[in-house]
Length: 592
Image (cartoon, rainbow, N blue to C red; front, side):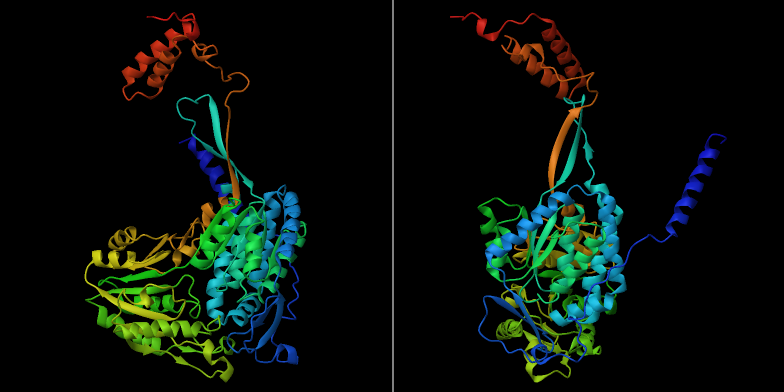
């Protein structure tokens, strides 16, 4: 006890000191970011307030508008391939400087970003809402919380996972020390989707910059306006820590812009549809540029008969209506055990009928608008195909007071039953607020239904028995799974995110996503240099001895035989061969 007492006192004192240090706020400077041109103060000029009317597609500029009101926001340039390469060249030059930066500087950059985001949540969400049509609550959940979670994870663990990682050397290399080192790849190119314009910029940027890379991000032509503000936040934070200019860039354009970016960087991260993902693959195949693809999803939401029905119904509706029909992480197939099917459906119908869609910034609607023009027509076609094959709509939400010019931008939340897997609604990614609900009678049937999809992004399984839910989820072929919850895997930013099948491959987020931005280098060095060095054994030095192979055979047995006595016997033979006089194999007499 006398020996342990001082250690306990020291440990307690250390804990107290660490706690007191936590009470001291870090010295994080504030940054100023001009947002005057992004705010809707009701005093827009004619050029920035008229209703946007779709016309012939431009090739040199991107028209931007508010999906919820169809108000025109302005034009942005559609960069040509030569212009894209200029941006990449500047980023490459900046990366060579940033690669030498210390983790202390990188962490300060993250703290500055985090401080700004927390202090300007409303501004960030409002700009996202104006650009995509989502509500402020959805913007907070999908844009702010996920980004803050990623930043805090990198601050806490990022450096740990990028430091050299020592590995075992095996039996034959006991005199060596082996490790894995992580170096920046260079310039990362990210081509991201429209559904989370803030987070889809920050997510790849944070991993790339913290791992010592630069990054050029091509934002979607359907949500480019907000990106021009979000890049200002990043550039201001980089300037505050003395980072080189052009380390992070956001570019706008159409398909040729993305193709030019993919062919000129050192790694591509793509978030989008399977069709465009295949085009990216064909493009990068010529230069063998590594790529991470996060593509479509058709997540299964499985509800067993032993759940709290009202509780799970609320989660199910939120999963279906995630981000006003822009459900990148949303569920699109709902499988409910037949024993609770009626009660679950009744609860869902009650909730959905209370949901109203409308202009999100009015602050009185549960869901907003559809971001892309003509997407409502696609959703209706999916519903019509299902109805033609026997499906029935049992509930729809309502649409509030919207302008006549924006009617096509809204699709009321819809619950549909009597569905099956012959319907396009159960096979194609909808990206809309539609809940197709099917019955199942056994766990095996639920698993079979969930796996009957060309997609494999995620799943959610609900059961009163956690072990049962885990057992079901373990048999679903997908990249992420939530047990008695929905989308919680993405909020755990230490976890990788990605799918299988037509949902893509590779991972972003987590340790795997962070290291995917690195050149992974295996290194072996002498453990006791210069006292113990690698020496080629005499029997296999050139010219190779007559008993060279016998020596090798005995060495393999000495190192790897399963029986300890066989290994000791082989070791004796090894020592014997080492002490024998070598006769070069080429000097042996031929025996006729």
